[in-house]
Amino acid sequence: MQKSGRRSAGIGRNAVVAAFAVGVLIVAGFWPSADATPSQAGKLDALIRSPIGDNRRRAAIDQLSKLDSDEARTKLKALADSPDDRVAVLAIGALCRADFSGAEAQVKSVFEDAHRSDLARGMALVAYCEARKKHGSSWTNIKSYVKQKAGNDRVLKDQYAASKAKLWASEVDNDQ
Image (cartoon, rainbow, N blue to C red; front, side, top):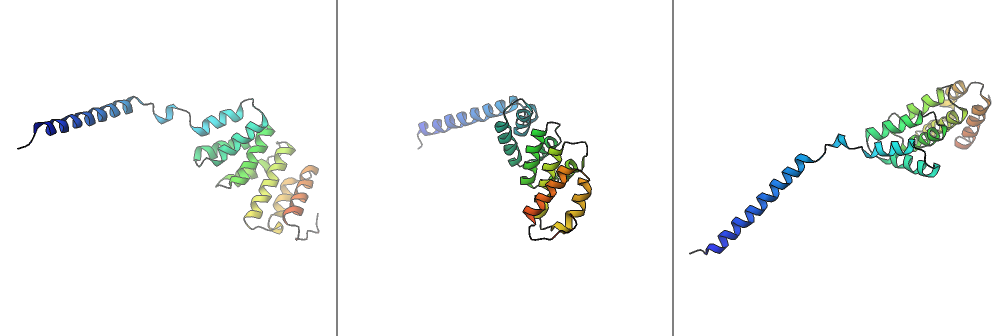
């Protein structure tokens, strides 16, 4: 013969588990959807575009570049196009370090844009040279592109000469 106490304890435990499951379903039903709350990349983008100090902005851009999402990459590329040169330069540097698909194309577009400041274009030039060196290109492989896009801009000419000297010191370039 079985004791009725054990059986009633099992029923009570099952009732508690069932009540808990119903509670979880109710809470899940009222939980806000993921698109209703701003994402981490969105929060960082808003912070970067707000009036904050350069050190906080630099840290936020670095944090954004470390997020592994398409949204973060898209926002980082958009920041490189920022009319604020301080933001653009930091974003270009982060694009160079992140080295994801589309980063180099974004850097090239800033470098090629003759309407951008020498500061933004110079940073894009450095980032492009660094990326090409990292991927095994020689100065000979990229010099015609770099020189053509730099044009007669004295600042950019000095910048590519410095980049060449730093990254490809052993290569001879007699047509400077």
